[in-house]
Image (cartoon, rainbow, N blue to C red; front, top):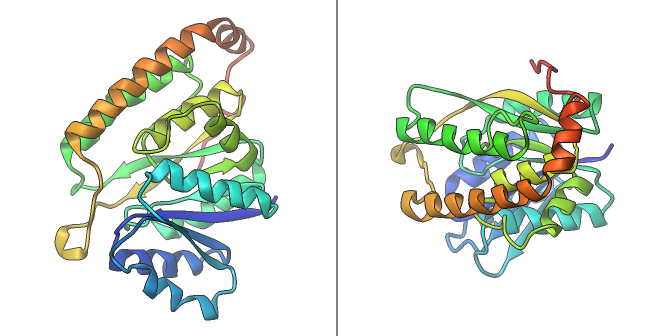
Length: 257
């Protein structure tokens, strides 16, 4: 197994360098995909490169979305011989101290997708916490309960081959719909999934917190996505039923620390 830590970023300001620096404390191979950022946040990351030979910056000329950034990084990771990517957000929500746990699980279960399952703090917006339950319910319906604990959380480990197969099976999953659609499509491939409880932190504006989520635009995008996935899941129903009859996700009952 050869694992790479992949961080997509779009205008995350000073948080990007902080996230990268803390990530490097736990894993030496970190790639950042700058998705058309215009805030010069890459300069502080470039300053870290002389001391960290495993740190690489990939620059997208225009903003194409989180999924497109992950796709670009995964394609280049595959070309470089990496077998797995650990994705995490650049905005400080995902805890770098959880990186060793994900890596240890990836080594123990290299065939699996490791899906972070958020543990929210009291500062988490209630609307966001409750709203994701709807997406989770749809995702589990679309996979006949393969075992997606949270369809929207972005700290995950993907086998690179399965991730690229998911991307190549759709023209979508390039923006905010990425996390959910790719999770569903990986489950459709029969890739085992393990849910990994992971703390999440929502930073305040004073702390530099930024969010690219737009309630109206992105909820419409998610609604359209689930409509498409439901139609596709009906076409896959015989295979999904056959897998469910054989026990479904073989790692569904693995309890991650």
